[in-house]
Amino acid sequence: MESVNWQPDILGDGFEMAFINHPADYSGKVRSTVIRKLATAPSHKAILYVHGFSDYFLQKEMAQMFVDHGYNFYAIDLRKYGRSLLEGQRLFQVRDLHEYFPDIDSAVEIISADGTESIALLGHSTGGLTTSLYMSEKPSPLIKALMLNSPFLDWNMPTFQKKVIIPIASSFGRVFPNVKIHQEPDAGYANTLSAHHQGEWLYRDDWKPDVLPDPDLGWIRAIYQGQKQLRRQSVKVPVLLMHSSCSVKKGDSKESYFHADAILDVETISYYGTRLGNDVTEVTFQDGLHDLVLSKKIIREQVYETMLSWLCHSMPKS
Image (cartoon, rainbow, N blue to C red; front, side):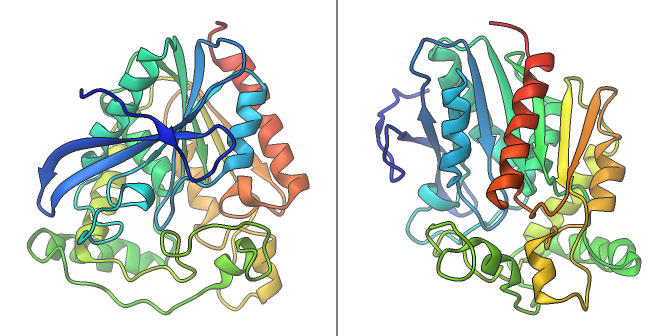
């Protein structure tokens, strides 16, 4: 891998970032971004975070929490997301989740070069699906544990759509990957997050739009195939499965968005998540949002404590 050129990150406060160039794909040049903040004292343990769909790494408070507890913290902005976006690229474009594996591999290589002996991989939503698939297929021996924050293990839609419409869309996605599927705009989740609405977080809404973009058939195929492949495989390291205690249902009030997962069905997260491997610890959080670490302070502090406590029991001491 080419030499790593660290530079100050947009988060400030000692966060650094580096671009990693990868071989061109169907859209042209691609790169990923690694963001890091190292613990004050030398440490041989690290967290590697992978974001979700329509997202980028912005969870500065969570990262600082890990650093304060002696972990080196790293995150990836995947290709065609956030910091990694190149001019002319379509935001969030993917045709196969395996496209992201080199992004994870290169981050692990960097972490190893920094002297790390054990890594806990942490994935949110689509990042949770991608990291689970990665760990079931070709995990680095440095990765000793997997933590999942509301992983996208199943579609949140009626059974007919999941069993009939999605497989058909996936089939068309092989031939017509760029065709977009319109969905009704819903900014309810963003309203719970953004400080410009009723939330407390400041972030770039060109990288994390208030309204989810219409997915294309290539993206639908990537998710469908990834979920299907994962169900035939197994994660061999300990898994911490975290999600809200309930989901927003059709017809629920706007207030419900502040107390539940507004994106995924927590029942299917639980069903498929507890079957990922032989060592899965499931924890639910009352009033948790889809991204648990962006929930209200009292809730996200419970999430932090859960992760730290679990890591103490599941990660090798170093």
